[in-house]
Length: 220
Image 1 (cartoon, rainbow, N blue to C red):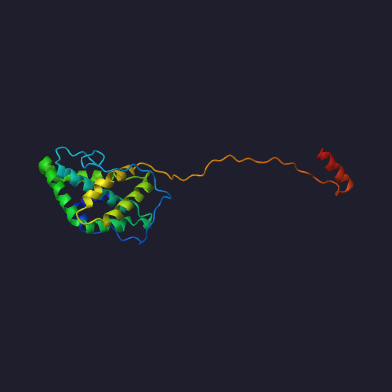
Image 2 (tube, rainbow, N blue to C red; image 1 turned 30 degrees about the vertical axis):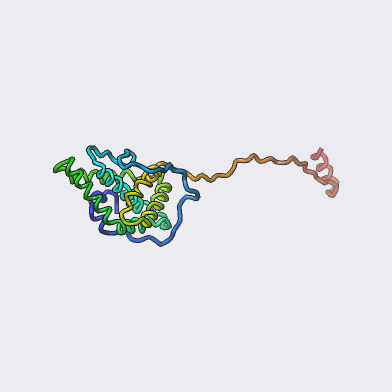
């Protein structure tokens, strides 16, 4: 499924699994967890996603939740190179477990765009969804993003129904920051290598006379 089709999926994405299930396993793609800034975030923080002019506090909460869902969706599409992350299984599980909360966020956003854009509301919502997906797409930071999204997806599955918005508040900052390239923190210490001096001793005495003389001349 290409990202170009994502904007046309709309509400249907909440009703059906995103992709075929991946191999059940657990793991990570980086040897060490990258140092990614993480802290709770306000729903109205610009880091969450696109601008929401005229949004209410309820609109911003839906916006935050929808961006978290979009990030996990993009991870399900982009991170299948490592089945051990289980981003597909996690995303499908999140859709099923938190379906009511996600449906409420969808309705809130739909009402926001209808209120602020009138008849163009559906198209504006579609554009918003497309840009939101695109803003989670990454190549240079793919490993860090995939590992972070996989962790968040796992956490979401263990949250009680109705608590996905709280998880979004806690984890959206680190998900956004994971879109910056991260590298392994492990490296070999660059210690200088000291070589001891040595003298090569050649025994010429066992050679025939001519070779012995040449050998002796060469070692002087």
